[in-house]
Image (cartoon, rainbow, N blue to C red; front, side):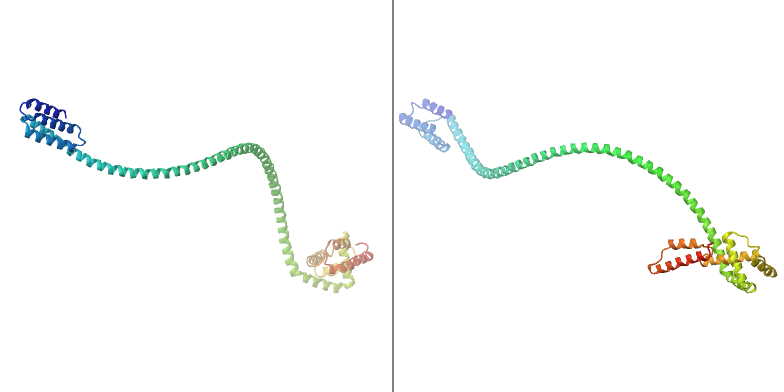
Length: 336
C-alpha cells in the first residue's frame, strides 16, 4: 500500500506539467486511492489496481520502472488471492473438522453425562461398601477380642493339659507296674496251670489206660467172683465183701477173720493169695466207681451231696424219698 502511494506521488510530480486535465485526473486518482484505502476485500483491491493501471496507461506517461512496480503489485495481489482461495478452502475443511469436533464433543458430553450417572451410582456403591467395611471392622474388633479371650482360655487349657499329662504319666507308670506285676503273677499262674495240666494229662493218660484195662477185664473179674461165690457159698462170700468194705472204711485188719481163712484155702489151690484177691476186688470196685456210683461214699456224704445237687421241679418228691432212705440206713447201721 505504501509503495502504491509512493508511485502515485512520483507520477504526480513527474507529469504535473504534461497533463491538461490534471485537476480532473487528480480527483480521479484521489478517488481511486480512496477506494484503494477503503477496500473491503482483495477482489476490490485487485479491481482498483487494474483500473489504476489502465488510467495511468491512457493519461500519463509512466516510466518503465513504475510499470514494472505496478505489474509486481498486481502479481502480488494475484498470489495473495490464490493464498486467500487456499485459505478459504482450508477454512471450509476447518469448518468441517470443527463440525466433526463438535459432534465428537456432543458425544463426549453425552458420555460425560453417562459417566456422571455411573459415578453417582459408583459413589452410592462406595458408600455402601464403606458401610460394609465399617461393619466388618467392628466385627474384626469383636473377633480380635474373642481371639484374645480364646488365647487366655488356651493358655489355661495348656496349663490344665500339662497337669493332666503329669497325671496320665503317673497313671501310666502305675498301670505299667500293675501290668508287670499282673504279667508276673499270670506267668506264675500259667506255669502252675501248665504243671497242673501236665499232671492232669498224665492222670488222664493213666485213667485212659486203666479205663481200657477195666473195659476189657472187668467182666472177667465179675465172672471170677461169681465162681468164687459158688465155691464159698453166698453167705461166706457176702461176709468177705462186708469185711473188705469194713477194712477200707475203718482201716481194720481182716486177715484173721474165718471167712478170709476159708478164702485163702480155696485161693491156694489155684496158686493165688488173699493179696491177689484184694487187688482184683479193689479193681472191680474201681470199675464200679468209674462206671457207677462210688461204693465207699458214706450216708452223710450222700445226704450232703443230695442237698448240694439241683433237681428239676418234677423230681422234688424223689429227693424227699432218698432223704428218708438215708435216714433208715443210719438206723440199721450206725457205723455209717
